[in-house]
Image (tube, rainbow, N blue to C red; front, side, top):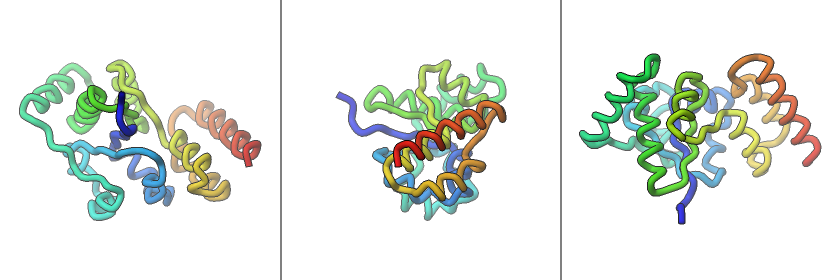
Length: 171
């Protein structure tokens, strides 16, 4: 039986949640957050002390896992070592826990994670979960949409419209 759901967080999603001023609310969702040390060293803001208040600390890799990261990076053009470390960490944790991979604001990372069988969530998914959990109100959620809606404009517009309709209906 899998234990608590894990979010493997990428720098891009942390920065977007921080800019949207809802990063501190993420701890209200029922996730155990994990971050690869490759990503930890990439984050300039939010400050590492702020990340620690969310329960985050860098996950260090073994030599064998670093070799896996290097091999994946060599075969996946356009992905950084940090991107590849996210995938390797998610796969490692999925052997023990149910994993939700959070790092999809990078389209190349999203595609490769999916190809590797890693489930993904983006900022809009988390924003929806925050509204449903009543961790934020509709006004703040609406303000966050421009920060968390990434991708092709027609897809983002469609998803944000669906979310707004859902939130209004379920008030």
